[in-house]
Image 1 (cartoon, helix red, strand yellow):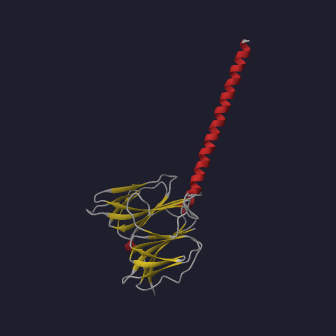
Image 2: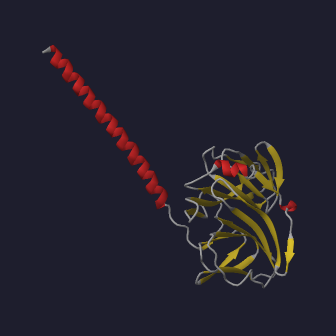
Image 3: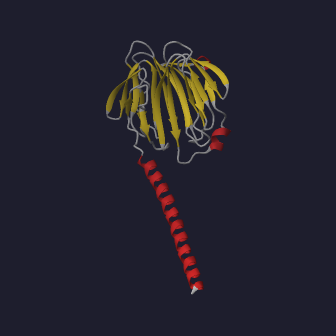
Length: 268
């Protein structure tokens, strides 16, 4: 009888242990499934012009054909204040544009003083600090990028985190204005990340409305234009950014009396 009780206790203990193990598996599976659903439920970013809005509200926040998450924020840094960014070794890739400077930048401990139009590219795990040494506000854009298939080795093989000073960018004039080709490189979150800055003279169009497979961001840092975006025409001014989905007809026309200057950002 004693042996029987001991065996029953063992049986009950095994049943409880098996139940707990199964419940743990179910909970882990449910959490992973929920995370996957959230990932794929991320709203698709729509083709349109998004307005500059400094603060907690992003200009856009959603998913595209390549990136599972892409966020564009504006930050106003008060006089004497700092902003620090470090997403961790497994975090998002970050890209910054100085909207209004100058701004003192510490990238992995190296100092830079950057003005309007300058950029900072930050690999996961690295750190950048923006410091406003002025009394009035300065402004920067922050773009976050995440992918379902990041490749840290690919990104690091293409080169380290870096800054590009506006005054060091090579300007190549052409019949409509000119262009500054910043880079076309592999990154952690995609095999190709391409950025150039166009200067477009008054009254001219960038090109006839065209399409391409890659998504694109047009970010106006100075000027005033009208964009063809599919079947609509939308105004874009200093501070605005337009998201263009794959294969949507688009172009931009300078409708002001001074040159328009804008970033064209693509990836695939």
